[in-house]
Image (cartoon, rainbow, N blue to C red; front, side):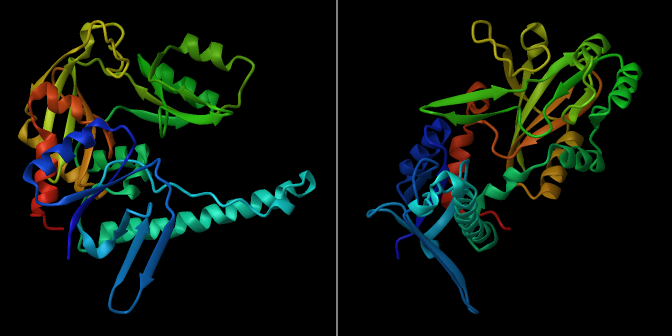
Length: 343
């Protein structure tokens, strides 16, 4: 029976293209890639006493059977929902609520069926890198676990209580504010895609008083004590192995607070970096407690101590790989081919 390497990704992800090129260089396995833009035509789930399996059909030429998967890489995205609208007789305005409820029901049915596919991909004997369930990463829970394994973390507050937040400002010299979950999002508007973002920002007590003047109710927001850093560190983790890069973002006002405020005209200096053994051990312990076998971590060094900031289970690694000649894409391809990692 033919076996293949299965990849779920976002359309246009260049890093996935690079990994597939390395796989094809070895010419051992066929690669089946599904993007988040590919609609599922048919899905079959089977649960029996002896085994459980699934098949997913994308087109007449592409059907994925779980028993044919040699290895699986969850990069990003989701199996796209092939939306089934409720019957037309529910579309009258007076029946809009019922129509919406039925469509929501269809969508939830799909979501739960697909969750089982992801469950089998993660929990079966199929070797996998990454998991869709890792997307449920909670930044606050991660900070707590990082603290538990011995990482230093910035003093953190999440609140929408003006008095509590003002006290936090008075207790700390400098404060940053950022999103609890995601720094931004997008939505469809007609034939356009609109995006919005909530970047990491430095706030003073004056800024806070101005923002909250006359408005004591707002969304709970994450605040952290600002830590002056010597440089930032991006670490990519893959099955107990780490690849790190020092980013000298402090030398540029645009990137000083967060290197992701990219300056394309005057890019930051980025060099390979070896984490101290004790810090590297904490990274491994953290990822094991989170049950992640891959991800990108943000760490800062203030000249004396290392502070953990956050982890993205599906974080970018291509630029780190190329800046530091790590050939991470080759290592991912190698693991998907050889399947030597024991769960």
